[in-house]
Amino acid sequence: MTQHPPASAAPLAVIVLAAGKGTRMKSDRHKVLHAIAGRPMLDHLLASVAQLAPERQVVVAGHGRDQLEKALAGRAAIALQEPQLGTGHAVQQAEAALEGFAGDVLVLYGDVPFVKPDTMRALLERLHGDDQPAVVVLGFEPADPLQYGRIVAVDGVIARMVEYKDATAAERASPLCNSGLLAARCDDLFALLARVDNANAQGEYYLPDIVNIAIADGRGAAVIVTEDADEVAGINSRAELAEADARWQHKRRLQAMADGATLRAPETVWFAWDTVLGRDVTIEQNVIFGPGVTIADNVEIRAFCHIEGARIESGVTVGPFARLRPGAVLEEKSRIGNFVEVKNATLHKGAKANHLTYLGDADIGADANIGAGTITCNYDGYFKYRTVIGERAFIGSNSALIAPVRIGADAIVAAGSAVSRDVSDGELRLVRGEQLVKPGWADSFHDAMKKKKAERK
Image (cartoon, rainbow, N blue to C red; front, side):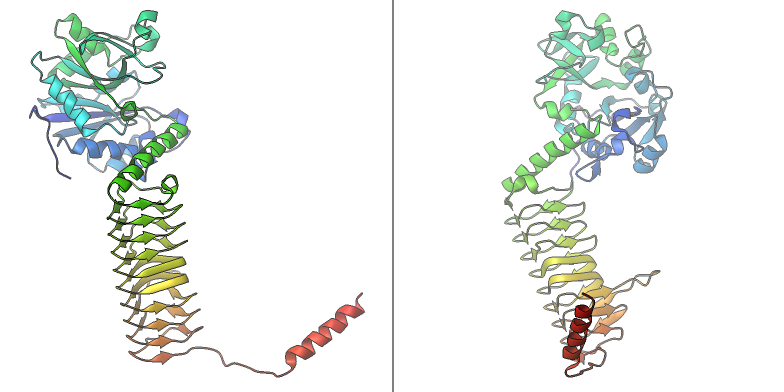
């Protein structure tokens, strides 16, 4: 994705606050690592941040720092907040990581993952407005303001900011709420934070207090307002996580249909964050996409399929009741039918497996036919092995292909065979036990058993 630095062209640093314990999640996993559409909420946020090409990124951690370090893998510096003494104190912990930096700073929250890049740019552009405010805050007007901090402002210029617990009745009546997100110049940010005290109801160092200090200094502060309250919705519980995922899915479904896909029952289709759909794709009911799926034009995904890590080319039909696992590649006009599982395997053009089959670690030649009940036996308990099936080969029903094995082009494997050696091109391979025939045996057996049963009554 193309990166667009902010219009101010000043260097940018981003501070992401993620030091909270997330107790309402009731989880051993760090709150910001819980996933929405298969992607940790922190990564949703950092992907948006990346579009602004920041020079530095700092994540402020506390509880679960080791998890964040592992998840970030060097993508951002980690600053430790211990103990947690409020949001202002949290931002102060990033000061050392930004030593020598001269530019703008965005303060974001790891549990507010869907802030749009354009909103971030708007904060930075306002920071460099003609009146040169010391701080720019992102405000919003929720349907229910609850206990959010309030912003008292006239024409976008802030007169006062106050936490809900410290607000008067008149201040609580203001519909404009503080999202917690803000922009400031680096030097201003930390100079103002040094003057924040904890003389408030919670005994904490509040980040919004820098606004009031700047106003008292005559520097001024500004607010811009997002029209989408969902953009700044925080996620603090499993229920809120589910609600956020549902909102994301709803928007993604609308986007899919706007881009030319047909969803038979949109509310039953669940996308991953990176699902790619071509045009004229039809998706039936109850289909779930995991990460890493790319679907070309004119593909039909029938009901009750689960697809992840797969590439599906044009003209393919999948399902119903199929499972595609990572490494599955379905080339043009191939077909996967009901109760077929494919993992790390390629079906070349026109190949088909219509029902009741497992294809793992396999290469299926063009126009090959895989009969019902076929299994590629790819694992010996220690190692994986590949099965290679040639073009136009016909694999009869209920066959076991014991890898490593190669089936030649135009070869036929008879139904019920267990094949452990290579099959040459054009060859018939039949591997069955000798068929034993005993005429009349079944009749005699039934007569004897019926007599025995009658004697026991």
